[in-house]
Image 1 (cartoon, rainbow, N blue to C red):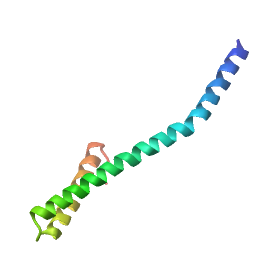
Image 2 (image 1 turned 120 degrees about the horizontal axis):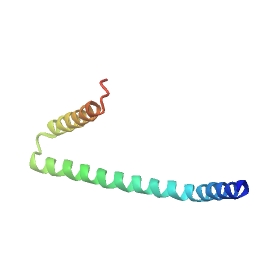
Image 3 (image 1 turned 120 degrees about the vertical axis):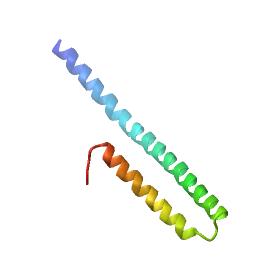
Image 4 (image 1 turned 30 degrees about the vertical axis):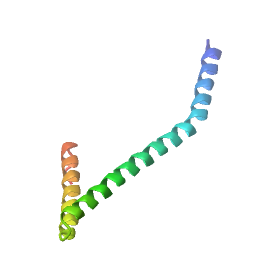
Length: 83
């Protein structure tokens, strides 16, 4: 019985050691893809804002900074972490 559990444990460790690098690479590719699409959406939004309001580029940057700040504050307050 102990020998069977030992062999099973060794097999589980071997499978984890063999699959872990592939899983980490796949997770890295997924994160890079998500960042690529998020960056593309942000650039597209900034370009559209600049086309609609060409003289107010500074206001667009200010609004973006305020939006990011509000999102961070909202996320912190939902998790109960107050500064």
